[in-house]
Length: 227
Image (cartoon, rainbow, N blue to C red; front, top):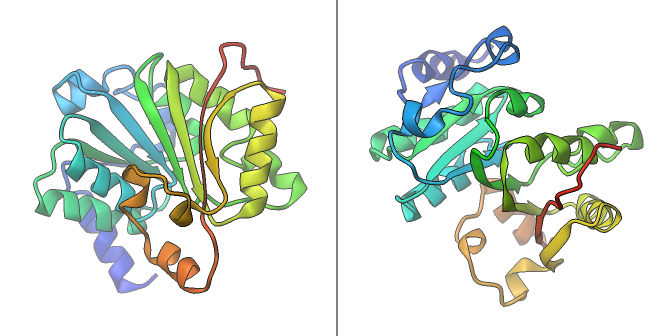
């Protein structure tokens, strides 16, 4: 294992904003489930998740801009998350946390009506048909999110992958979720909002290569069920 990874793993443990529970502790009911506001953030501000946060560029950017909201970046790769956690510590951003766990287990980490918004920023598109269930906008995952989202909450998807974008539109239509906004060319759409203000290393690379960025927002309906 590269020395930098080992160093980052060791430093993560020292960060007050970094949580890496054992899988059994999550499966048996994470101790902060339903208690993030009072148990971690010590306020009643909205809780917003970035799922598959990687280095946490979006989580950190949003936390800087919105001190009146709480942001949690979730990923299973702690070495990547180190960058965001360290930046947040260095800048004394207290409205931010990083949770190292599998996204499949988020239903064990958050209680009913605990989360106000979800961001999916360049998730793995899982293009093979047999991997459909692993797509973060599949009915399987949407049912998980429904367990802890406040009714009417917005889910954002930003991706360079047209296949995942079109798949998500199909799921929204099939399950009668509410499509709020969609574009296949975000940076030429005229849209204004937080999504425009941050670009990851790979997003800049995609744009430099002439790729267009897809973006959409939607809400889950109240009759969601897993297929």
